[in-house]
Length: 612
Image (cartoon, rainbow, N blue to C red):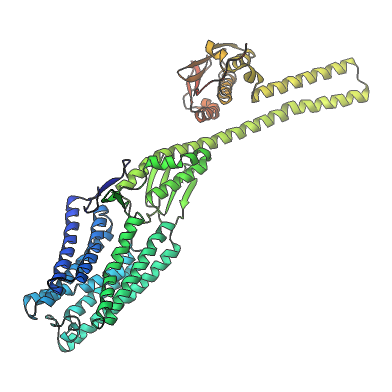
């Protein structure tokens, strides 16, 4: 997969795939040329000159098979299916050449007749491969399951027996098709045995072909939508090919027109449906296009990473992090046409797209997790697939990091909620309970001025504590006066010398609530840590706005701590909050030399100046 535009070549050309080497292209082209030459020469020898139109139509129809085989072998040289089609096409072409030689030469014992019989017997290989193996290993060149291995071996042996039977059958049987007789046929008992073995092999091949057809129907019912679209065509082609062969065997020479239709159907049905699947259902990232008066083949049709992300963009913006991972996994599955794809987080959480019905074939790291792909719906993974997956790993890694960050923020919010609940329970609630009890006691005993003064002081303290608690949640001075004023108010109540320095521009501008809140609480947490843990005697706070960033720096002269030690853990939630806003948090500390905490966030814009 590349990010370039689709590549087009004239349809008359044979476009070499990027992964096919020159020797591979030469071999594939040679096999296709042998097939086409055999069909043309054999057809001319069989029909004589001038060649009738029906014979030319048959020759042109037969060219479909080697053409499709050549295209697949060149575009996907690692897929055995293209090579199977070329071998089948060679059997068809050489078999046709052998028939032409046998019909054109009357000398039944001459060298041409012997060569013709050897070549004509290859028709049995063509029919066996067409009936069994072309439908069986469609479209990726692999058996549907290991259980089919014995069946494939049985079919291969049966095709071989059928070929030997045709080659060695006596004249009485061979002459039904070739009136000049079989120059290499056996006579007597040996000939009858050869014919029986050939007939048995043909019957076994036909029965295996029926079982393959039944398996295609089962695969159609169980497959994915993409697989079903392709299998429908293959089932249609297999039925047509078997029907055409049966029609030819039944009518033979008695009905030339019907027999010709049967032969045409048997020879062209499967190549035609394979070509349809390749071009219509994008089996090899190839489609036919028309530009003016030219017919073009368009390659590399799979979407690029940019196209996939552009299509997913609106949905990703509206989805939560976990749903984003699911949609990205679906993009991997659709882009690579795999049965399933999964995104796994570092904690073992997996988000799977598609039915996980096969072993993992390809795994690529993505940030703090990894992407896993199951088998492809057609073919095998190649360099283009791996390149696409590697490119998708970048946005998926960012999505994994986003999901991890979201989880940490949720945990931090839950911890903050519990802290507020605990403070209310242990502080203001207990004070209110005590105040109510005191009021009840004063009413019952007729408390004097001293009791009322004490209760009034308790109520004032409770109110002060509630205000302090509210300031910890979101101080009103931050909403009213802005970041600089809120930080100054917070630091004015500290028991140590604290200096707050703010750029003049900060006092006349307002920023989004989430940005001001994040920096305020970062400063509050930093100065609280300096008091509680660092035993600082002096704290300096600086607020600055420059280069599109709003910065807050808190330094102290406390005892500091070792890097990576527990002293930095209290700021992890604030670091996540900064990261969620696109900013960052840096902590530097040296034992005995104090601590420096720096936080920054990008500022997309600012609100109107604070009224004077």
